[in-house]
Amino acid sequence: MSSGVVDAIRAAGGEVYAVTSEPQALATLAQEEWGLSFECVGDPHQEIAGAARHQGMLDLRTSDVGEFITRDTAWAVSHPKGFYQPGVLALNSERLLYRWQSIPTRANMGGASGRPTEDYVWGEIQTARADTASADAALDEAPVTGGKAPPFFMFSLMLMAHGWFLRPKAFTYQGDGVNPMQRFPLVLMRLLVFIGCWITAFILLPSSWVSLALALYAPVMILGIRKVYRTFAVEAPE
Image (cartoon, rainbow, N blue to C red; front, side, top):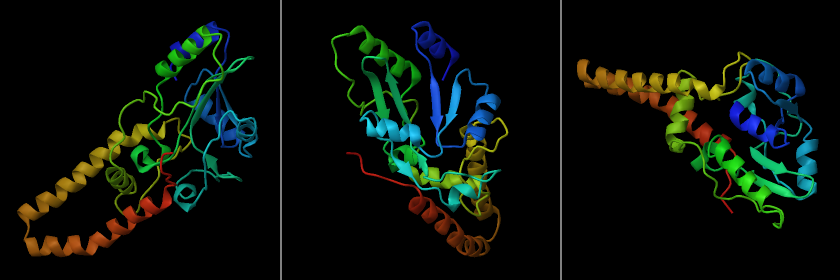
């Protein structure tokens, strides 16, 4: 979230918090290394998310933490109740001003994309604040989102490229101050080079040799892509 939107919210008398299912130590580390101007709150036991669900404000989807994610982190992952999908909740002392929750599908890369833009959310909050006679905001099911997610098959290839084409590797935070999604351009370039190498090999080398090499490698790619499709929690939109 940009400092401009955060400053605007604070100028209106509000505050911004990022709540994560990570432990507080990791939430604090991300806040410091990413230079965030708002507080990150760890909720590994999902007490905050549970309270929002119990009070009918927001019902965040929860996904299990599997080996696919835990293997590729630089520390011991601690999600005793799994990790919850993204959501946005804005409220004042009187009513709910805005709410949105992600439903993981292959169209949004299992919940990794398709999130509303900050300017859009702030605009919706301002509209709700101006209409003092309105009731609680309904769940936003068609927000304005930033960018467009690639096809899920392409996303699977990106994960394979991230794992140097031997296995899929998740884009998890490594405690190095780098947003995992910032690695996307580098990994995309790696994928293009990989494809280019196969094309070049077919042009310059005997096709029988290259075909044999591709046939031997194909099961590795197929198993990796299959793992991605089976691992990501996917729901059909309601």
